[in-house]
Image (tube, rainbow, N blue to C red; front, side, top):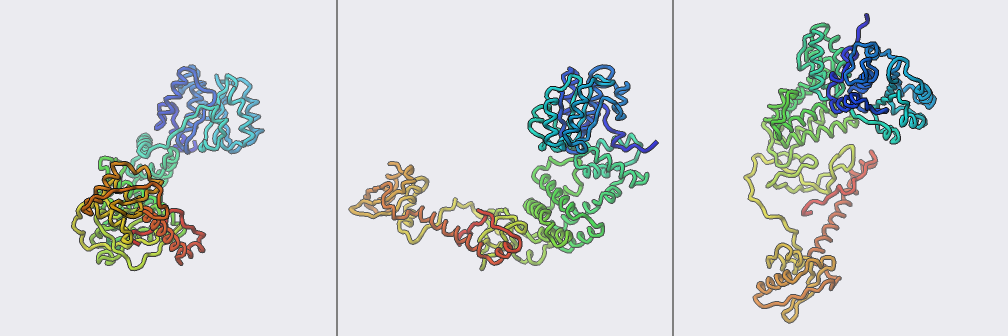
Length: 569
């Protein structure tokens, strides 16, 4: 007798054997128990999660000789023939091979005839999204009002491609991707039944590689059994078979990065080269490991048995802000890998970026390269805010940054400060009051507002007023019409009292809304300066030689709104 693949041998025969799809199983069981199964059912989900399996169990429940039931006996001739794939009234149709309207018309014509053996004639249409538009249209009427002895079970991995007219005629069930621990436990149970020795860590590697598909996990288990040659499923053998030996070396590389040990980092890269790895997959694994480390750092109780033992010590030894920056670098490095001269060089450059770049103000790790240890220049990762209380050194000349993908993922600045990593952390700073807008020293009214110590909405009213003049003990101000809502008697009197206290004599204040439109208030002057600085920043980027070179070479563009002027420039 020929060998039967594990995916077929261990296919669930009853609803109770289906794992990870309880939300679907419960609904189908209740429908069968009450003989109220919808005439058209749509099962959706990725490959290997149980669509065909559920369809066959439904067919058994409908045609079992004990009657319509959610618990088919499995021993009657109908159940056995469905298990063997030879039941005449279960018609499995591959829509990828029968896409045309003629195929559907033949199906419709045959549906009119009563079942040959069973109680119901069940049509299982796999990959139904592959049908042509005319085929779907031909099927609509039969789907909506099928003969009483016909049930349609449609299965697809891509429900978005189905016409809404088809979706509205079906009862839709979405099957979930299976979690790694569930696949691992199922593979372990099967190995026990098969009487084979195994390491749980090796089975876990198979479950991880299955990527949510039980059928893929069983196929990989078949391959691992053949690879082991009867010696049992070991982690080393599974990693060698899958080409994932380098995953453990990644933890050594992360440890070297945490210590700032460049030589150990290069040793790890060379060790990876010995197994000719898939560098794109390594970057994916690296990003996944960094994500789990971040979870363990911020939510220590969120760890589970599937976590690698090496993650916990790394979570304790590496600063959380470094993990956040490295994750961003890993994800962007994976995105930019096709643009690298060679995948290996792109992978190595990603790791070197992790070694070189740290968040603003972060002290270098022990054993860091000389540039960092001696106060060398490091630039914060894109989107990482500077640490509170740390000042950035102003550069002599602004660094030039590329503006567009695939080279630079972050918003482009006209001028960004290069932070200098201090040899020792500075003492903690006192909490500072919220910053105010810079005062225009050329505007006497703006200076006077600061001098009289106004605050809150009263200060906002004064800043939106322009100085008109002073005569006979009366100060005249003109308020912008768009901010007239700021004016009320209480605030006017507050400004009047502050001016009187400053001069030592009684002063009357008159505020005219919309008057002297040719004069600029301090607030309007600030707005004008901001607009001018923004335009200057955008012009600087657009005229930058390196930006122009990227535009010419890659067709890059500066993302609108990504250019921001540097404060104080």
